[in-house]
Image 1: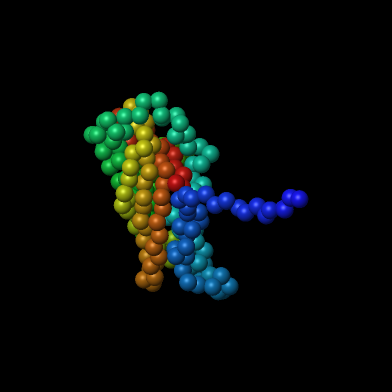
Image 2: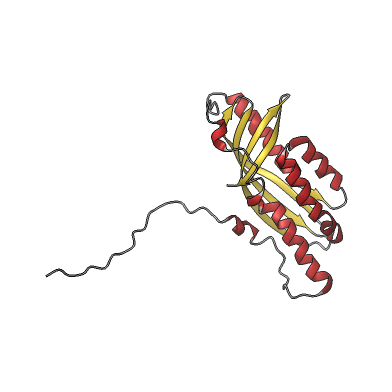
Amino acid sequence: MKTATKKRPVKVAGRRHPDPRECLDGLEPALPLTTPGPRRRVTVVLAVVAVVMAGLAVWFTLEARSTNAVVAHNSALSDVAGTAEAGKQVSAALGTVFSYRYDDPAKSEQAAKDVLTGPALAQYEQLFGQVRKLAAEQKLVVTSTAVASGVKLLDGDRAALLVFLDQTGTRGDGQRSTGAAQLSVTAERVAGKWRVTGMSAA
């Protein structure tokens, strides 16, 4: 006589990767969604900017170059100088592009034209077109800093990197919001300068 046994689920150990949406936690102000008038618009402003700051998951997902496209000759470990230069330039570029002042939007727009190319630039212009007016209303200043980066692949004038950004948003009334983003980035070197071609949440 056989006795039926109950199968138990088997747990597999592994590192949990955070949901990119979790990056938004803490960025939105502690204001109820039902707040009427200007305070409700504050919530909308910071919600949109939070997407800019940490919700980059959908940025360039469809347009970004596949990481597999740069694996043919990976010299990320052997070319120390080239790897360091790629990491330095791309990190600085991202910190500048994702910093934003309500009273000087031209600075961010020019930075984007300098360091983004192709679909990346088009997506940036579309996204910040929605943010510009809302940020001006709340006198919002967003500061982004690349705190760490690593070059995963280096193949001639192509590279794939992992970049970690810390961001702080400050409103005209002094209210602050903080957050972080972990980005998988592809880049191309043109005339000695690395330009970002695609990004997605890592």
